Length: 161
Image (cartoon, rainbow, N blue to C red; front, side, top):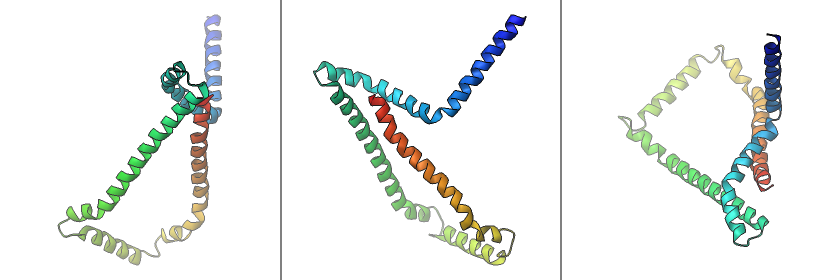
């Protein structure tokens, strides 16, 4: 019975230690996992190029360039579709109402009335102090943006290595 308990405690300790390492190492391990996936996907292309007497560095660079081009094409397609949707949005909202623009006019009137009648309500101080509350969120947004840019840089580097 004592042997079973010792084995359980050893396994539980290993699991906790492994989970802790994964949690604190996520900054490096997540990009490393993406890089490994990218390297596994690109390996057949790189191997084929190497068999055709292309140097290894050129084969890796070609594979990464291909990934960048595909990613850029997908982002371009997404932006074009978003622009198309935003340009068609006024016609879509007008076509779905009985009187063109009546719904949006009603929403605007209702919000103006609500703001006028409840200006001194409990939420007015909250709205007035909102600019002071935005600063921490700007830091979080910038941190996330720079983290994403770092990952976009480091994942191809890990893949190449």
